[in-house]
Image (tube, rainbow, N blue to C red):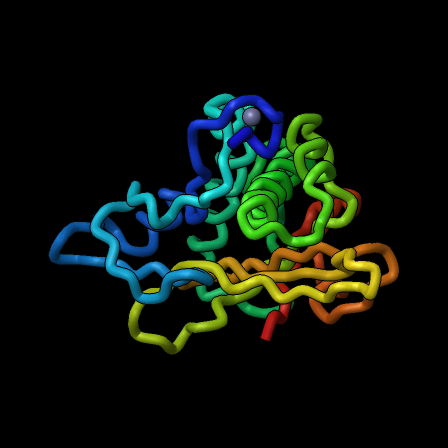
Length: 228
Ligand SMILES: [Zn+2]
């Protein structure tokens, strides 16, 4: 199978939960301290190591796209995720000053956006959703925003659950009569925060979109959204 981003032969899979997010959530995972993977295909599957293949997407990427190309995107999310964790518990409406997190907030927030463009693209490539993957690969290769991908970041949706949870939800999608997907969304869960990742064709009205963040906004502030 070829890399869905650049089309060259592929030999790796994307970690669908960042190792840094996993470590921050669960500490060191060992046989005695196991963690649980929640995803569409697998629930409560015991995992012994963070590098376990269960955390990888089956969508294939080439080594270059999975490391060199997308490393800045991974790093930017790592940084934002850490900043949000350090401010936990997050409150709806709270404003995060992005210049306190990044030296060049708009460039780094574009990279955060691209981290989730990659994440979403892997899921589209893996499950064959009727969303054009070309827009995703173009954005990643050109380091430009995907005009139809939006993010909203809110407090954890599972704050009361004793067990620490990290994972992602199934994709909910609205498909038009002509077969095209008009809107799709899923959640990326960490114990302290939840990211709502959305794909929307122009003209879609959704609760999540009203609170969404997109690189075109060029805002210096990130408003913590109400996702429940
Ligand atoms: Zn590639």
